[in-house]
Image (tube, rainbow, N blue to C red; front, side, top):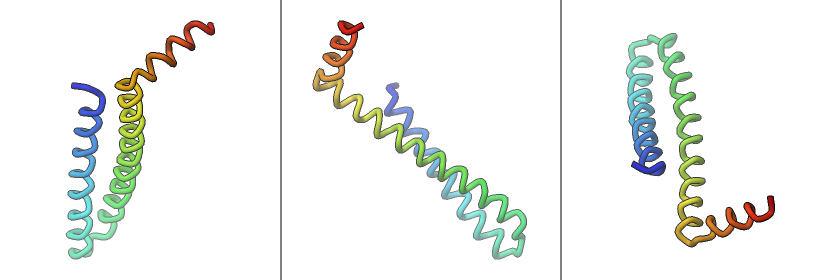
Length: 84
């Protein structure tokens, strides 16, 4: 499994967690359990931050794969190796 596949799986898991947390927050709010809802809100915030990081990583890996498929990455590495 390559890096992009792993990132896509992580993104899907994080999105599922975010969906579950959002549903749970609404249910807790309806029951008046706001203290637990606030705790879940913090978990939701953390998951959203993690999702943002994963999307940035995916963008970087996509760029690397594109450069690699064009041979650009190999040329850059070879040029750098000759400079040192």
